[in-house]
Length: 621
Ligand SMILES: [Zn+2]
Image (cartoon, rainbow, N blue to C red; front, side):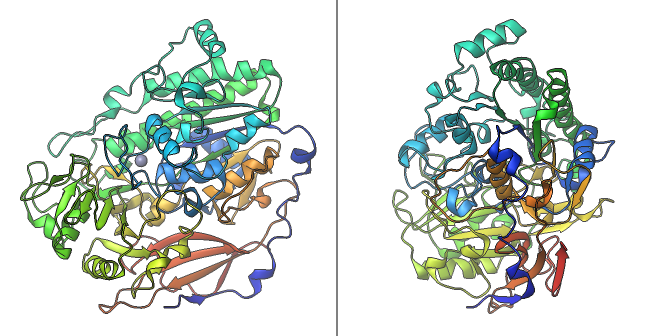
């Protein structure tokens, strides 16, 4: 099968010329300080001077990236891996938040499909994959090797991933790491210097829990209505009263990563919309969580001013992904017709993909999060994950459940089973777009993993099939990307929030930057991505690591003073039609050889997917 390309010819010569221009100041002299601020799950178009004044100010006075991209699968750990290395997921191997590792991880709960937002689990996976599951150097590790001060503060998982190669009990001696686990038995150790500074600032040695904000509710009980205020206030205080003053006193450049769990955590769990599509993730709890992240940024910027660091510090703000309201509706799913204790009638249960595939393929289903217990009758897998086959310890097929997209692994690389699985997936109305490992061959209706940069030098196993779920825009009264609704494989309820899909609502993350190495008052129409964030950060800091893989982002030269402004073009890539007339369509933008993925799926089943946008130049001179 050949992907048909509708596009460009003129655009290809433009690139590669000016990528390093405009960076002389950062290269030849001591680099400026850098703060990477990640408002987890913040949709680009939710930021206004009213909803998020501090972020709006950075966007409007610094660089406004109007054409941003989260990488698909649009999950936290995946996009965190791109920000921290500059590589796409095909190289980092962090294909999602729950992945199949092909060994039983004890700290993850004796499972082959660990949820990796956990420092000890990441340490365990590192150990299994020769000390570095990412297989690429991170900017924080490179920066501290070069003598810069480094810290990562915020949500557990992506924070530690920025500097993960040392054991959690040792890592505090290098980068300063604060996350949900700090002070607990699984937390990253703090150095004596940091402990003393905490005491002096009157701050505790342990992170406060999320409290009510962590309550997701259930089918009858609404989830939280409070943002993650207390925990993040602690992180912001640690950053502004302990870490930044300490870094200033050292009088050398620093890198600080601040990963704000809000709005993500609140958008997931919010109880504003139980079992209802509206207001979904546009209710009051969500708005409070956006303001919470914004308040943290404002506190950081105020501290920079007071410490006299503002003029020498660059700030890059990028959400890891956008967000969508959850739908649990399907007319075709057999699992939606079964009744479960914890799921409203006719709604998709958690683990619907595993349940429906087990039935379609006539294979026994076992629960890898419940000691491989067999799933039968009115039950669903506890965490949605499933291992299929006669022997659960040697499965034929593994499903890693994540949300707006799921991963399927075929440990035996069985092409016939791949074909049967794809046929079954094409029959479900909740599927919108399938991406298949190039090694398994080409299948009508699907595009290869390589088409979205998911095939590279990953140390962890590459999925056989990535399944994207259906999305659409509700009539929420805002821009379509703010009204995204998606089918999601999750314990969360219809009306709560999820991401992970190829909806433009999930790929359109908030991105902005400000500081001495960025243009001021600049609106950029050029496509940028979270892989570009890692490459641009490395360039600003004058870091150059050895690269294992070649799937790298681009330095965002257009945002830098005197940097070259390249051209961008739009393209549409299409798979062959399946027997039933389904075709995976991928909307791409190109800047030279760099490809950006706007949206993908079956036409009519993905928000923002344009089947035929035509030949079009999108930006640049
Ligand atoms: Zn999330």
